[in-house]
Length: 216
Image 1: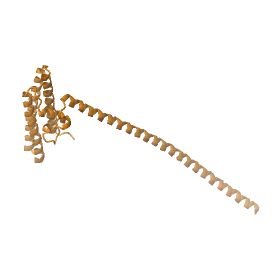
Image 2: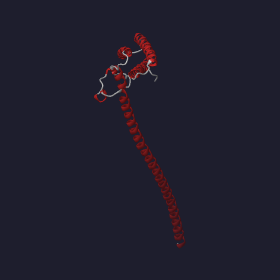
Image 3: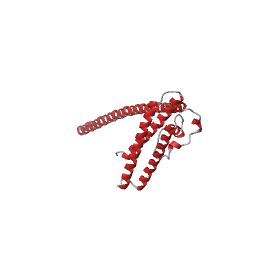
């Protein structure tokens, strides 16, 4: 099933918003360290303009889909809610861009949540946990990297366990094949022995019959 064009564009637009948040955070860090941020400002302005255009395009597509009954009213309301949240983020990012050098809640929230998720009501305004409230952005990123490394280690362990189980399964399968071959050989041997026994029985009967005839 092909992905819905509107939802695909919405996801792409959310990625642009996330990139804007990261660029603003990087710009503010450079300014605090006395480094040049002119290139970052140019990139942020370009991304903000692109974000605005994509949101406007999403508006037009949604109105068209609702007016032509391509989607249900319920789905139209859900998408309008997503679009409203995206508009709020766009305004907050615009304000954050103009607020040079000051880290805002929207930037920290966007970095903490790892971007935008469908169905989450304005995740950029989620309350930050006590564990990360006093951490710098570098500390937060390092914490995220440690979590990812721990997850990777867990996946490696699981992969090793599954690999061993697979090998055990192959070994059990090979043993079953060998046992089946032995059973087949025994079955053939029993059948051959049974055939020989029947032949010998017939032979004995014939000899016995001849002996009786001669005696008479």
